Image 1: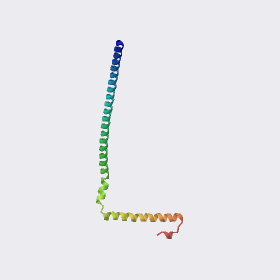
Image 2: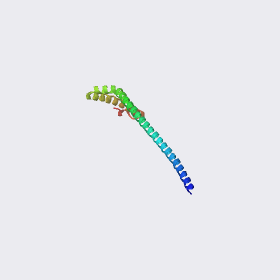
Image 3: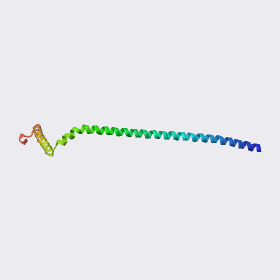
Image 4: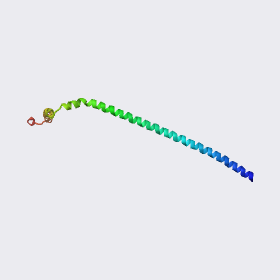
Amino acid sequence: MAAERDELQRQLAAERVALTKKLDAAQAEMARVAGDQQKKQAELKTAQGEIARMAAEQKKLLAERLIEMFRPFREVRAELSPEKVNAILEDGSVKAREVARQTLVEARRAVGLPPYLDR
């Protein structure tokens, strides 16, 4: 009986050692996976930061180009006084009225209305 008990204790000890090795291996694998995950997260944050930096540079470049593109318009606008704007609008109004009058004359003739309606 003592021999059987010793044999059982030896088997239990062997199983305990095997289980401990499996547990250690599993913990090592979990640590490796966690380390890989942390590394990938760090790489992702680095990539996100780089993308944000590049986007900021592109926005700045776009703003500079837009400012330069609209510079001539701003310069012309700066030279305009309210009186000059009103004169331009009045001149355009006179031209538009003449074009509209001629268009109406042509339209009335096309539909057969009498010419006395033309003014």
